[in-house]
Amino acid sequence: MQSEDLKEKKKPKWKLKVEDEIYDWDEGSITGAQIRTLASVPEGVQVWQKIKHAPDLLINPQDVVSLAEDGIEKFSLQEASSGAGKHGAFN
Image (cartoon, rainbow, N blue to C red; front, side):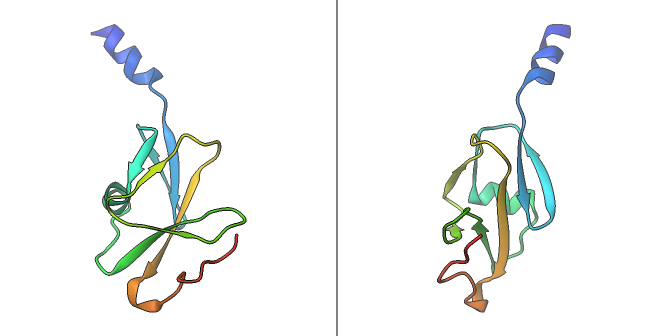
């Protein structure tokens, strides 16, 4: 049992930031649906991945986002009816 506990402790963790909250994740990728569940994103709110020097990217529930890149992947939330993000914001 002890060796299994050590494997769990050595398992790499990834981080992602949704708005101002940082979350730990055990896998190198995450789906939009998993982000919504993890961050308790309500219906009618869209998840946008912040992309440095490029327009933000709308993340749909079925989309898969890699967390394996250096740094923390960042996401913002927008009301679906707001129209914000349609043209993308530059970070």
